[in-house]
Image (cartoon, rainbow over all chains, first blue to last red; front, side):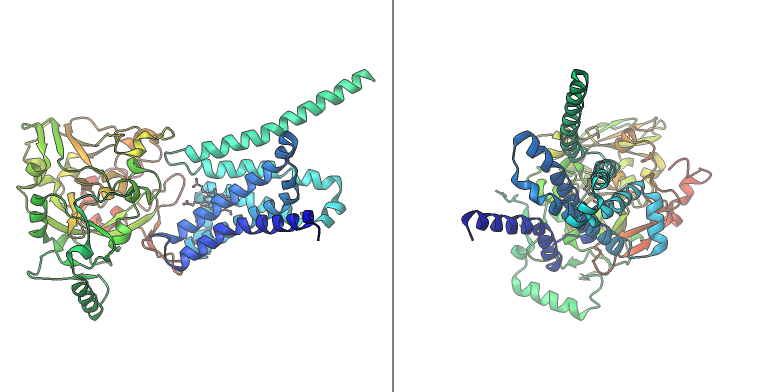
Length: 207
Length: 335
Ligand code: HEM
């Protein structure tokens, strides 16, 4: 292997293992009964937090390349997206198992009475097809439709924002932080989109 | 660095290892359910088994004496399994010290609660600023084991120690205009990091209130301790309300002011979100919080093997005692 290859190889493993760290810590703490009086809530909370962190990281990769010309994270964009889906599914399963205990009537009640949960569920439902179609093969097969489909990530991000804003009890510091970051991430896309349109308009007029 | 408060000592420092172990042994011999050990008189407050590496809080000397002489009010106590001291003292909602459940235990250890003064004001014959000692000393402290139901749909069972609020309030001779009692928490952003948060929608200081008949009801307790010791700062030292048939946020902590008034007090959570938190906030499985169901609750500690879900009872199971206070009222309207 050349040096470059080794670096790339190590880089892949580091980036692959890092997002598993929070899950490992969570399992460790659950194992030693170190999650406090309400371990179920602690697990739901922590996995939700990492689902959103990883979704925001996924969304940051393209702007990093466009604005700061940082290209290396591009090859991890799919991995980050899949990790976000993974944590969201664990989050959902933890909620259904540890909080609701798989009681169908209670699950229905929670779904109908906690609107933020409906919104979260919608986000997961929309993330799943993105996960399924994330392979190179699907990408090739879907062609332009793949891009169109994966634009779903924007409404998903907005649903997740609603999911956490709806949970505010009195302190909105966390929501403000995620909201600001998302505005920057989506705002940069709007900026590039408008620039592109302006350019095509100009060339159209010039022609 | 954590500097230990002089009155925060570990139980291992006052109980030798062997005594502790023996006691533990003895405990196993007992039913091992309620984790308490009766000593002396039948209604004396038992000596609790507290894990030895947990801080306990002894409070000032005068309080220690009174705590030792306290007795259990068995008639007002549930025999449900107690929530362990560890969880009672590390899983708290006390937003003055942060919004996370672990924040109060983390940030309140340096909280200075001695000396402590309480202002009594409004519609009373004897207003004034009283030392905590003068408020509490004339009373016999009582232990009461109450269910605590949080509006967030979890609950605990806690052995509080305190004085019936009515007995305390009567000493100041409320006038006939005293229709409500308003309570205020200390406002001290230097000591209370939560009050420095720029992203909080709550107004400080925290204010709560009761109707005068609720305040005078024998179940309402002004607590100064729990688990046989002084109140931990994270639980609202040195003086907090316990109103067991209402959601936990009504039981205001670290009280510095009690005001008697003829108008319904403007209470903190009610001001912030009136459609979510009513003035009464009686525990009621039939009236859901707009964002979640109140029909059931999770009794803490829960485990990953069992969500420990129990049905929520009207008035948190104290309907027999307090339902008559609200006779004729539409509890869906006056939630
Ligand atoms: C069916 C799907 C979902 C369900 C049932 C669900 C349920 C919940 C519940 C019950 C909580 C409250 C936990 C607590 O008490 O602290 C929560 C919090 C949270 N969820 Fe979800 N969720 C879902 C989907 C998602 C998704 C897709 C994301 C992100 C990608 C997400 C991110 C979060 C975050 C960040 C929190 C913490 C919010 C905060 O503390 O401010 N959830 N979720």
